[in-house]
Image (tube, rainbow, N blue to C red; front, side, top):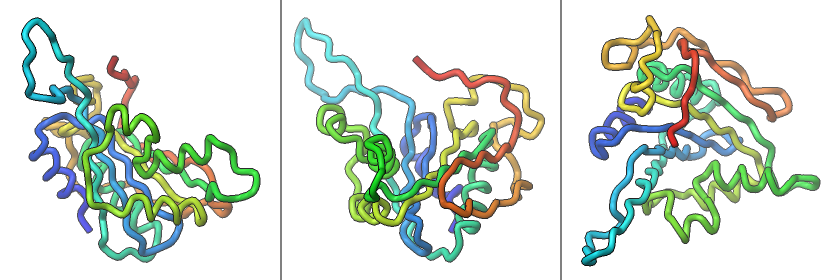
Length: 212
């Protein structure tokens, strides 16, 4: 499974800079992975032109991809995403492990985090769609994750991404903002309790500026 190549294909097709990439897996091996590509850009929602009225552009919805290749350990997924993030020039990869939210004592915040990890943004989706229509099994996987728990990875590409404009000093980056494989950072085992945050440092960034 080469996620980096899939990522570059999407960047070449959409032709917009990436803000971030998230990948979510149910806490059960050999289940499909859901990748969401968060684009940075604005477009008119309609080609309709009304005299004397300006129709403001809207944020470009993200793209959801389903990765169906078999995998039999979370270290395998970690290694794949570390490789993609390394070649994409990302400065870090964040891995968050969460328990299922359909358990006694789970908070509304845990339920919301689970939904958003699979691209379900509730009422915001109706008012202002944040994902393009897709044929993934996000809903079914989200229901399974609510029972079994899930793992969500996040990284911000420099190559083909918004973060290239920061011009941060980093000797590991090539001219185009990427890096040559292989990634020197090894994957780490999951936490024994299946909950918590792990951050892999891949490069050097002195600051992160969020776009307004």
